[in-house]
Length: 326
Image (cartoon, rainbow, N blue to C red; front, side):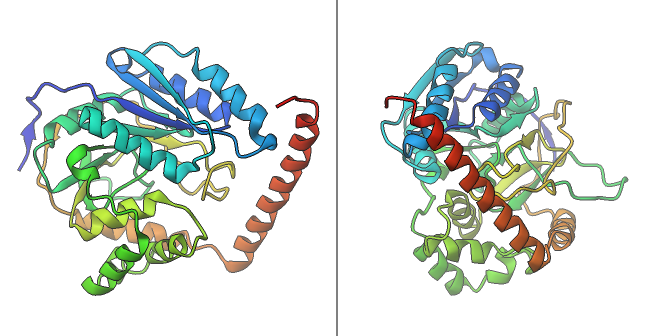
């Protein structure tokens, strides 16, 4: 069942979450400014506070920049007076916006968007607003390989995504912040293998690590919340989002290029499709994730290099901060 989009889109507010990465933030803002609906969109920027003296200069630099941003209907800067951390910042920020506006488009400071990203988000937020089987709209999808004769632009998968996404107030209410409750429900439903895409990607392990305090990922809890409620997310086959933060600078992300995509700079024709999981995409996604499994020794090397980089940056920043009166 296909149906052309014949509803007038409402312009949803954007929530942008920033911290201390000035170069990433600039790329994200400039891409959003280049979007077709930017001048009709209210932008809310949540700026997290610095953790310590080593972060002060970088946070201050980002805050100085975001206060000068234009090109949107309005720009609203919310400065945290202390460090929330990415998870708390996103959960509280999204909750605040959806309670006041009913819907939201969410980006982080390393999300570079196509110029048609806002059009796509607004079109489909409007089109599926009353379909309670749909929990969110995603702007990103993985660089899987499909047969050249498989001609689709959009599709549904169970769960939720976290790189350039959108949702409604009614669906965000399903977000369960307690990872232990989610873990118990996975065991109750006996759906671990399905959650892990036929054991090709270990979402279950990510959730257990969040519970153990080894990561503070809001995204794994959002995905599992959606999955357990049998909710679906709409994806574009050709991604309208590029994550520039996979350079080792982001939270919970190692340095990698395996998620790199060619940004889609063509508009997606708005049409309604049946809300069900696309099995062709699922099989291709399983093959893709299987191909990404990194040998243990390479993961150890990557981990060590990241730790060395972090220590080196702390030494440099401490030397710089010694010259600043905070």
